[in-house]
Length: 114
Length: 114
Image (cartoon, rainbow over all chains, first blue to last red):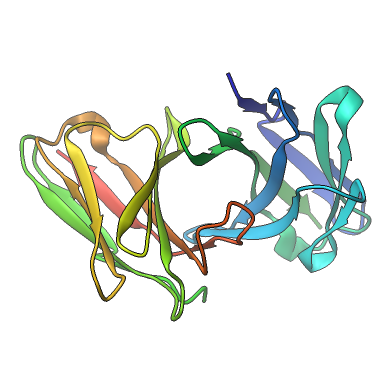
């Protein structure tokens, strides 16, 4: 069955430091992969998505993610974190099971310290 | 602001009751998706409609139903409510039916079942 694992429930980084959020997926075919961000009290916003082509994907707000098929991973990175990046981040995989469905990971909450 | 509106923002009701959540998609978007976010289940895809027709179904309970109207707004009906139905319900919309279309999320309706 398709699944998404985000191993880190929460991460704390200092402002200005680099960030990497981990995501591993399980899916038999070539996956559609997404990263979303959810700020407190808000809905989800798409940061970036991968369907095919270049395995390094650029997104909004300075985020990027790299698809590594051999590791079944799609980690999210940002070179320098800002305090406004504090939020919950969700990795998701799009799967074809009786129609296209988006399956989300449990999320990683990012705390940014001054 | 994603352009997706959801009403009401908050809903408090009792077990056994029935409620209706409403979603208006972004102007021009033909697809509507419903998601449930709860502490124990995480974020789960419920159902998708495209231009009035059901397109994909996820983990939607039989007590729940949805529809999309000719003006493209959508309603999610939850009946025989149980304590475990307490959650944040998100609606999202996209321009077309394609799996690769970006989904834009509304702010959600927080349902509390007492």
